[in-house]
Length: 384
Image (cartoon, rainbow, N blue to C red; front, top):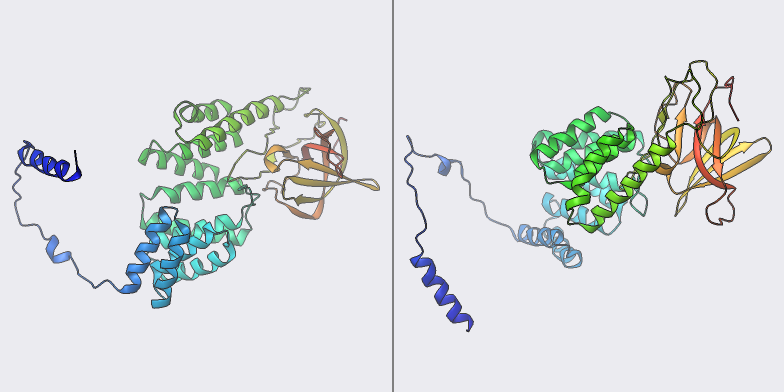
């Protein structure tokens, strides 16, 4: 059967099909005609629309040509600028993208997408090559939060803004109650969003709410169509098991009810945390398995693959490997150190108890694998 025959028979079928109809009478005439406006579409707008469409279809190379032509015709066209900024994000030219999107967001404050695109570009600026996040500087975090709050105010049902702002708080290890409320509100609007369920599971793991985290993961493990998302859920489930095991002290002194320990969580868009505990005057018992030493934490070094934790013990500096900050336990017994741990030199340097083990695989230049860093006061009575 040729195409012309198929077309003819389909039209004939549609003409004969008894589609149900319903007549509705309104009390007064609808006034939508008076609210409609017509405006000519400029050549620059046509190029921008086509480029934006191609960008959303992941045809970035073709999109670039259209967007560049749009900007050549009208350099100030907001849609062309914002789409070009997102193209630069896809091309990993994050610095250029942030600068363009910052200007667009400032000039077009009533456009929720320009606000979101700016926040999204900033979030990518804080990520490492493999997509993990080790925290955001305070100024960058404030800009992200302001842009995302404007986005939600302008478009209350735009779910991506809820997701990204909750992720920001998880990365910063702050406002976690607010982050949880945002994620749950997003799931009420779109219950099938399994990527949001995954972030909620990460948040529950951060709080050591293991049962809740497992419950969050079940729909993903059972029904996820996205293979990558299912793999992330499986990795997080393994992290939950590991954290739950490690959170059980090797010895439990009778007076330790006011201390809490947690693993830095496994956030794949990625996040670090400084978990909290308070000594309360009692002896600080051994909580992790491995070699234990006291020294000064001088630096956490971000590597292309993993991190290096530098602890000076006497005249020697130990260099310990970590897959990332999510797989090292951070506990503080010092008020004022209850903040996210990020890479960089420690100023001031911190007195810590380091727990480490021999490297699981040979790693030249490392003294072992870091298990835990405990921030302790000068007069702490520590069990070695």
